[in-house]
Image: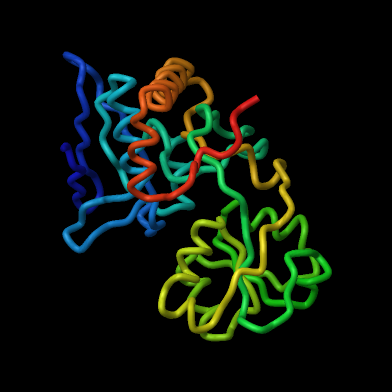
Length: 258
């Protein structure tokens, strides 16, 4: 099996390269986002999203090379021609479409709220009024909180792990994130001690988006088409389900596209 080898700033990911093919640079965030993409002790990048991207690149006959940068630097890196597409759980939203384009979605999960055990807290504007709510900076969850929880005290963090640590330490009343990430925290030793699921928030495509897609420059129609073909192929030939079964016990793709 081919594996990803990550150096400090750049790792080559060679997947069924075409003869004389140009390298396609794929942007991942340096911040850990398990089980989607995480660096191990050896500096190798692993996770569901890494494996899916690898499979899509192979199906699309792209020679892909990983470039890592901070989460909030990904879109500037794309528009600045430092990378060719983003593969970092980037939600498809109208706001982001003003700057970049997207492939078809390749997964979709709801947003959920976690809070202290035994404390009554609802994932509603009234339930969070006056509460300290932690979100990852520049994320769809920050946008959702700003739009739907205006009376909460919003605290922004560079990573979701930092928000989780403040929740554990009692410096937050709640944190809002992807449900999978919330569940993973709650299953950890710290999460089991302190916190519990408070429920999914109401769906809002305007802020939470239409699923997760690869971010592409607006003018790069050819790359978008190839990535869409790659997504369709791995979905159709069973590769997507095979990879997903290694990480999840349910269909992460979400509702079928209309």
